[in-house]
Length: 56
Image (cartoon, rainbow, N blue to C red; front, side, top):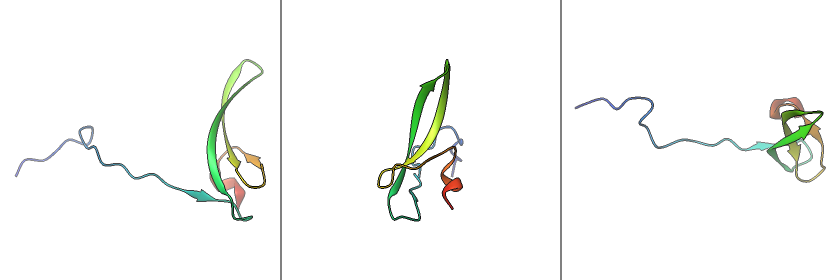
């Protein structure tokens, strides 16, 4: 059976991150000071961090 290249795979898993307060963490792109920054923000408590793992 022929192998499928890694770039041709269509199935991808998405991770869901959760804040200790119980809210879901969403990634947002923010333009500040002339730069584009990716921020992780909790929907429930509105806490912002650089990465989802910083919420621990």
